[in-house]
Length: 303
Ligand code: MTE
Image (cartoon, rainbow, N blue to C red; front, side):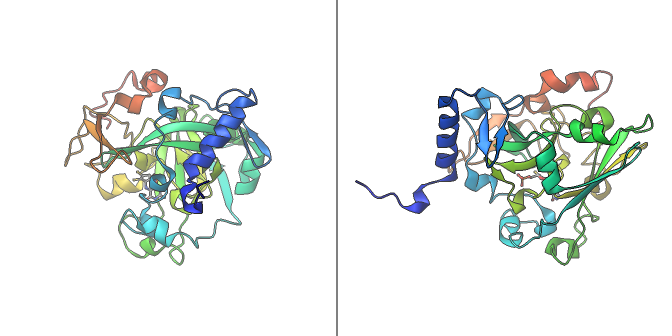
């Protein structure tokens, strides 16, 4: 019998085996046991996407995470010693109940699901990632937003000692992002705790990051320490750096080009030596779920 080298047992193989096992048990597709917890059937876990999940090695080595440098391999190379424990996240601002929880508490309080979403980077590439997480709305509801809460501002950690990229003014640190309150409360907006049935790797934004699947990847803030409910539209780090190129909304839109390049198509990461290009779809394919949020808006002006 051929001996299998450890290196041949890819995370994909382990992950797929576990999925098949779960299906055999008769649990609904998408349910998985992760450690002690039963992972619920994924919300909008699209069978269509399930067959096209990007390999783990690409998801975890081709990253944008400027706190650790601007090259794609900087995050995996420079973030491995980043300390994610202990970790506190505070939800405050226009809320009736300010809350602080550790990342561990968050993982225990909220039912973690697998959600297979496409991440479409503004640079023109995409990956399909099996995230673990839950709807951010569940956490925001606990804080009871007041009627003045019109926007949500996300702040990443500021720690230049651990994050070499923060020693340079590439962006105004810490990394800031924002959503309108109805976008933040939308069930697709996910607070992410892991991927591929495992803990979130540091290079992907551990211990807690956001995924907003219908927006360009930079809206999906990594390494969050504060979520503030606010009255006025926050200025994100990218808007501040280049307001003509990066707007507040940043919905994926093949008809609105970036000033320096087309957004009509995207390169599928991990699809071969000559990457496949596919047409980019409005709202990254989530239009049925989210188009109504923008029915009154000119999306060329509000890019
Ligand atoms: N969050 C922080 N804090 N810092 C960053 O540089 N980069 C963004 C986003 N979140 C970034 C961030 C960009 S441009 C993208 S495309 C995604 O993270 C990439 O996520 P991934 O590395 O998990 O694929």
